Length: 336
Image (tube, rainbow, N blue to C red; front, side, top):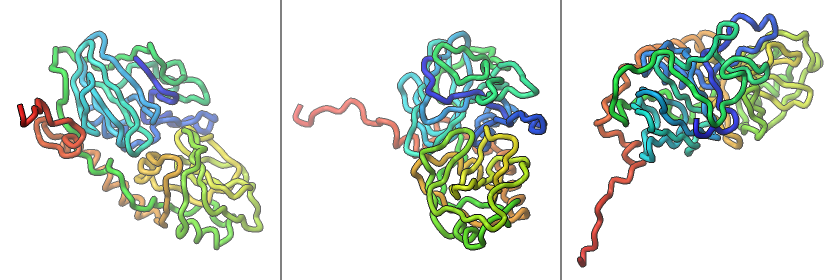
């Protein structure tokens, strides 16, 4: 590890079955991009990968040849100084270095290696829980000098560079509204506030982290029932509203339970899109229902199960990649 910005961690699909004991789930902020990167290498969808924030990361292949996949938002990816496309599988040899920096949009991207990152299992998961300080690499964010190894190392020498492109349309930036299911405590809110949720525009506040995304915009008015409930479980994507009326979307490192009413929840198929929002960017919501949410997830799962169909040879012309390259070389003066 040559450089790691604040907040880069190891995440697998999350620590399941321990919420009842107060243990956060953790896991990826954008499970869709995380799964895409893993599947492009033939890994299990939830294998441990590096979650990279907009702070970025610089990596070096040190000991042996390695295949690596990455997928997520629009970041700037380079290998030995050469620009790479937005999502791909690349081949590295000892001495090769990869740099990932924030691009025009997106908050997270994921780096996968064969078999996943070889870090210890803690309560059945390799995910880093920063609040609990366990999992991943000693329960902390990654730092310069850290050494990570694949569970399934590459055994042969490979040629450095781009191997295949990942042309995954489900990772592209979308202007569609984020779909919500009302509840479970929507009866704790004034009906006009519920309509506001689906008709007004919200913006992501500067107050964002792996625990929650706060929303700037119209505040919510609680009904006569108040704003305290008997604490109950919290799912990722639940929109909780404390007494201030300012909503927070609870994310991967959320607390297991909470005592404020939840007006709605983001459907699982849209969690990745919401997670990729940056502070100051617009968020608009639309009403969904359980049947529609299941259909949307089924369609997305179908695409993810066929990631291999979206891989194309690196020699093909990929416009987004080509636009990011300097294709002009050897220019001379017409006069000479």
